[in-house]
Image (tube, rainbow, N blue to C red; front, side, top):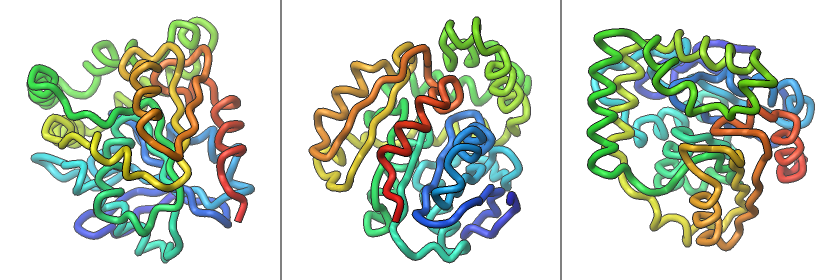
Length: 265
């Protein structure tokens, strides 16, 4: 079931299926909840999967200006309230979804049962990277989200996926093309100003799975491994023949890791 639900100051489009342990799936930039379709197919019979479009993406409400990671985290907490999810959840975030998870951890630690951190980082942007994001925001507003297909698309997907699974490439490109330019720009500004969350790593005391594609150019395995080394409860896994989006590129391997990690009760 997918519908729009009030979530604090915004209305979020969300897909929700299954019952049991709640798992909140937080998508990457500049995609939407459909990046988790393979996880719904494989795991909704065992868990309560909740996958929203973050503010400004997919069919969720677009708020112009800046969409901070804290605002997105607050949206998710309000969404859980609207869905009457009172028990702690497993948070699964990929890339920008991981940035949102850091802010959720700061503000709503009591609502977190376990973590799945995929192809993400805890550090803030350097000055030059932040400046590039702001420039890209202006370009997207002027030319539309289509330019991200060529600019960002190749960095998201491994060469193996491009050669062997062209249907995944097209799914990713379709999501990028459909992203509202105002929402994309707002998220770029929010990512550019996000704070460093490295201090949180040693404080994490819940079961944590870190997953990265072996061919990820944006958050390389060594960077993810270093992050895992700072988390006492971490398990670190690399998925072969995957880039920045292993949940889509190698969904069977990704789903097997989640099935092994997630509790059934």
